[in-house]
Picture (spheres, rainbow, N blue to C red):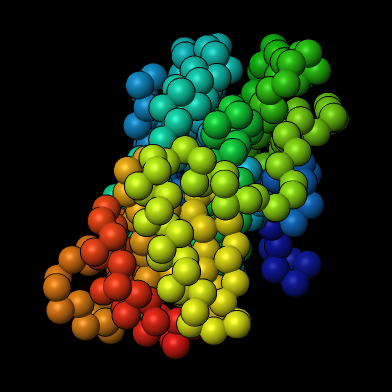
Length: 337
């Protein structure tokens, strides 16, 4: 394909396609410019956020791992047409997907790995990046985490193969796989042009023409506290009941909202989140580090650590004698939130 560039209808110049210098250049370009992938042709108003480049799996590094504002997960593999491995690219992305699915059983561990990448790349924690990129509040961040966790657990992943040129055989293979399986595999052919300091990319998406019935499991409906407390031992259940009783005495405006990963205690927003584990409670207070007088020094600063709840204070509660002290600090968080 040839592009004609002119100025005010004069001085027309013909620009021919340019070769990408290497796959690393293509990979970096997509990481910096994820909007170059025309996902709107799959789902309207989609925004893609690349959460990691060269994300390690047992099957090798994923070129780019992304999510959208609905918590959909994308594995993106870049290849140049001259690469002899291009014939194996569909098997390669499925292999990555299987490895990501198998090793994401512990979602907190997955979030911690992304947190380390986020801190290393920009010094900004992952949740803050989500808020800024998608314009989310705390509740929306929790919801997107829940959706990501569900999708990883169920192996619901969208695969994108991005190349400078697609063979007819690859296009046919992607159509065949999409038509005859539950996988969603898309291919993007990216034409590259350079004119002086300007780069022009023309993406063409293949695979979206196959429409399938949505397969996301129905996860609607409120959760109960028993969703969390049924799996812990009796002593931990007593700890939770004792903590809840004192916190509910803060005021009639205290609301208890069980979510997938924790039980939220809210006033205007979350002031305390409780993760019920088998033999202990992990409690998060929604306060900035340094704003509470933790005279006993039992809190952990989780500002740079991936975690389920809100706030930068984490407390591990394993004995009834810790409850009163925690409640005094929780009341300050209640007052601020």
